[in-house]
Amino acid sequence: MSFPDDPRIAEAKLIPVQEVLNKLGIYGLTERSGEFFGPCPLCGSEGHDPKSGPCDRFNVNKHSKKFLCRQCGIKGGDQIALVREVTNASFADALSMLCGDLNVDLDPAEAERRRAIAERKAREDQARTNRWRQTRIDDARRFYDRGIDGWRGVVGAYLRARGLPLEDIPTPLKFLLDHPYVKKIGGENIVLHRGPCMIAPIVDWQTGQVMAIHQTWVDINPPHGKARIVHQGEDYPCKLVCGSKQGNFIPLITPEGADTMVVGEGNETTLSAYLARPDDLRNAAFWCGVDLGNMAGKMLKVEDQRWSGEPDLNPEFDAFLPPPWVKRLIYIEDGDSNPTRTRAMMLCGLKRAQALRPGLRAELVPGVPGFDMNDVLNGKHKKKTEGQNDE
Ligand SMILES: [Zn+2]
Image (cartoon, rainbow, N blue to C red; front, side):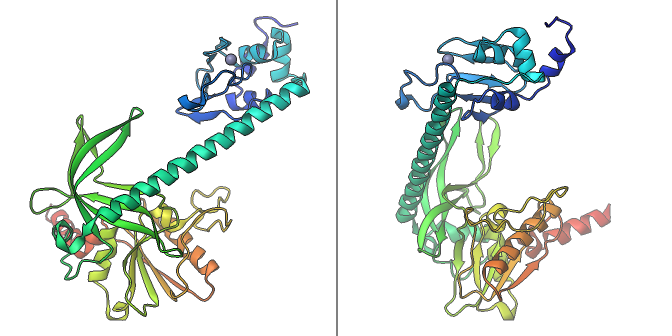
């Protein structure tokens, strides 16, 4: 028997939605913005038109616990109601399934049907992800092929505006004159901006193939610094990656016979280091790692440690592997982000490279807090320090 003041009611309502779903054998829901959705535990995806995208007729809110199937109409507002709707149990039995020792007795045929639904959904999701990834790679290659050689246009001006007076523009850098800045907003692709754009190829060195591009929109007006991209009063970053960057870097400068590689997070940081390179790095390669996560690869999770700094060497995860000619690998730290996290990620990437390339020498050039390498070489950090002293 169960009464409205049964203490188990409050207990049941504290059980996380995910746990209830597992108990009920409901797998294969997608979680987004605090909501689980997917095929319905009762009516599955029967009659669903796959052309309209994945079946999402059933949803449960993680926080409010409200659930609804738009097809068969099961609905309710808490964990007990969810159990009752799915198993057709009485209130008392549903409560015992959640808090007591009553097992959720799924008919084997029903359990099998749900497992099959979840499996099919996972396969469909994977296929969709693969198609999407390939489309983005194709887009990246098309843009890069269409790009104009960097020395002929806006690339040199942009780099000078960023304090990088390069004599020769690295050959991989190209540009497009009227390149659209597209962002998906509310499920729709919107062109927020058009204009000149520097295009850097993100390359898988093992195959030599362009897998993604790094795009930097440039101000159309002199001195051609970063473009300001504003949409409905909101600022957007002037840099976007298109394609599949994971484990791939931008080979900015690769002199013949190089045996040292210097890697910075951004094109600007890497080229700053190139301009400021000491004599022993005269013949080094300078590659851009695109972002910290890409330079680090997957990090090992260690209990009680936010960032272990140790690489997860599971080969399932794509991560950067230095070419065999690299005998010395130098990571340059930007000083402009969270220092603990940055340091851990840099070490993770270097340790990964050393684990995969025995005998490799690895070094870390520390950043100046509050500034990226570009600022440091431009003396901006000094100006700020002096300014602070004056106060
Ligand atoms: Zn349904």
